[in-house]
Length: 375
Image 1 (tube, rainbow, N blue to C red):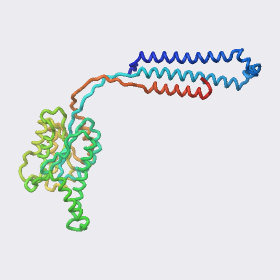
Image 2 (cartoon, one colour):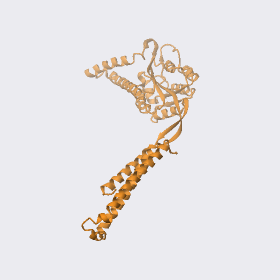
Image 3 (cartoon, rainbow, N blue to C red):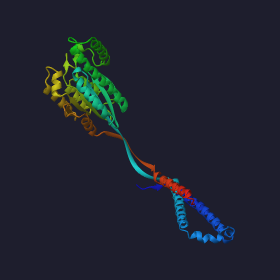
Image 4 (tube, rainbow, N blue to C red):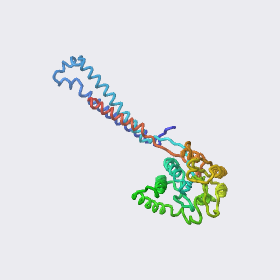
């Protein structure tokens, strides 16, 4: 890093002018001193004949030496301040060439919010909040689905807003869990307070999931393919976008359709691959899956989801004890983000810190000399 003066001529003029002023002041003081110590002037003072005795005293010689040292310190201090000030006036700086670009990576979190997923969704969303802040240059959106899909949060790079929406989802999954706990107690030993809480929860949940549960008596629940396909088309300018696009799907793939869905999971994955959208998927561990999905085959559904993810260039994860949300995000970020608007520009930075410190040091040295009676 080469430091140059942007106003070199001005710095030289200031240094020369200040030096002339200091030399003039010191010369005038020396002239006054010599005139005051001339023999004619000294003869007017009483005790002139005894001055040689004072000069021979040890304490006098010590004080005289200190005075001379302080004079030197003061002169060096003011000289350092002047030179540093002139250097500052010259604006010391360095120049570098910087290449800038805009990362274009869009990530959609696609959540199956059927009640069989509340535990996995809660853990995933809770961990995801801590990594959203690390998605520098990326946009994140959230789509939730059951029998139908809701664009819960459009793509945004506002991390604070994204975390607020994730907090709301986290509360939703907490309430789902509490609903299950109270439902299991409803016909046995539920208290009056718990029963009131139970009906309040039903009202809250119905309001929250109004858009995700539509005509469930005819359609069923957890329409995975339709949920994924809808999320795919939530990307703006899907056909001509210049952004790297990724979907992170959390589901147990336990589709409970009462009639043939418009789109099945493999077909939705084909649409993702066709539109260069990479699919990452998260599946519950076998014990949790069997607990919430009686009659479904764990191996069959997990393999189907894995095949659907891999065909898009993505990956499949089971949320077991070794599951790491941060690891998934790191792998997502390893996908090269498209960059556009690459610009090379020359930037110049001022570096006044060091000469400013020297100015302060010089002033302190002069103040020390003056405090000791010198200069």
